[in-house]
Length: 615
Image (cartoon, rainbow, N blue to C red; front, side, top):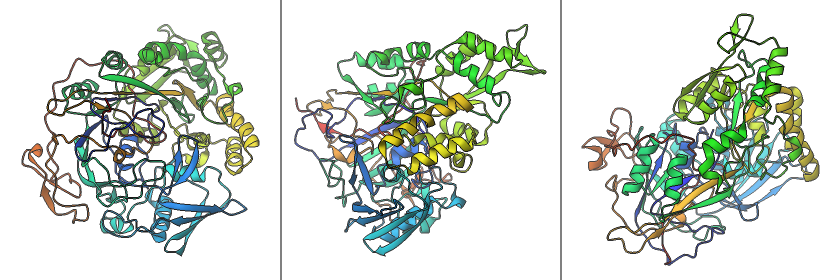
């Protein structure tokens, strides 16, 4: 699960993917990038993890078979050079690149592709991949070392879209070496960056893969990364992240408050970028199995009782002048193909909300909170940030609901969602295909690694999703999308909308002492292609360069530099026993209140790369 829109602040960085409007200077080799995350990854395993902090990191380590070109929305080759689809739509045959090797030196081939598909769909491993072919994948055959055939149980129209996002190639040898559950601590892929170390709750470090030369054709640079090292620092406090960015300790930070955004957007070193984000806007999953939200009247009242316009204006005001964060009134954002304005339901109507509650027997008590049969109308809302929950609390209080707010880290919220312990929880997700809705609402995604945190099990809704997944006629599929996006709200009301269909990023530049000219900043697209653009060399603030690569035995500890205060951390990934002590952080600035957002770009959040400025 991931947060919905783009907002990144970059102080010293790069931009150069096609279509983003910069003229590049000559590439330059070297340098280090420090990128802050607002939460810790759970595991760096693309087969098993679907959480955003992990994805931002492991998208640099692992490559997919194909990639969606944002310029024309078509699927292009990556690790696969070509593919064919059988007439019945159930078999995909991929021809693979030759000469590709994993970071441990083993060859990428058809057997590796089969291994990854089988592993992702092994129910014993509990993969968290709501966008994968759950229920559709049947098997994979190795035809030749460079040809693999994927068999589906029935046609599944979003398969190539899913292959571009969720099926990233892990090293079979790497998995077997440490085991399925530990591989996420010692990841081995084919990507432009190799894993170096992970100090839990402090940082993850990646180094340039010098052998990389298989980036997709839509990237301007196919060879090894220009940047030598990337360090992802985990900094949960937003004011600390912004302070570290301003001091030069970081080059990129995520999850910026509206107040900081407004202040820094007027700083000449920064310039905002607004992008359109398809998929599902910021939603809240409403648990339909836990009282009192098991009552349809309560769920409908929540829909009518929340003023999305007010939330957008109060929480997202500084972003709106840049075209970001508009109110959403359906499960799909308006820029998703197949979107139908006719599916917009439940406009703000507090009188209607009170009416349905009255009719259902929920009577207002002396303290203003409704009750029925001795049960008070209490809603538990667990989230990972302040700002929006308090606004929802105020809105629902006015119609007689008592909202109890719990703020936790993203991993804790995700575990709570899987157990169904709250009534209301955040549920965003970006996809280029409207089938993103099935990840949240199809009954097959209840439990396990699925993301149906509303716990809806509606056979009629399932049929609509299944029909859409097998439909290749675009006109019929578009009509079906309207039914799928409106039914959950009109019949089951398993989620409520809070956000918008637009995201924003911020890019900027600054002059560093001794670094010559300023550097431009920006985002490198949906796959976080840090390797695309170069940076001027700069001091690696976090760590000395490790001498050993990821092929080393992860059980052999190595010293990783003074930043660890003399503690030892395994190059293959720090273990709890020998992990580094968290480095001292800058003193926190006054806490910034309000809505925070996350790095997004397609599914995973892009990562900025560095290049010299052209002025």
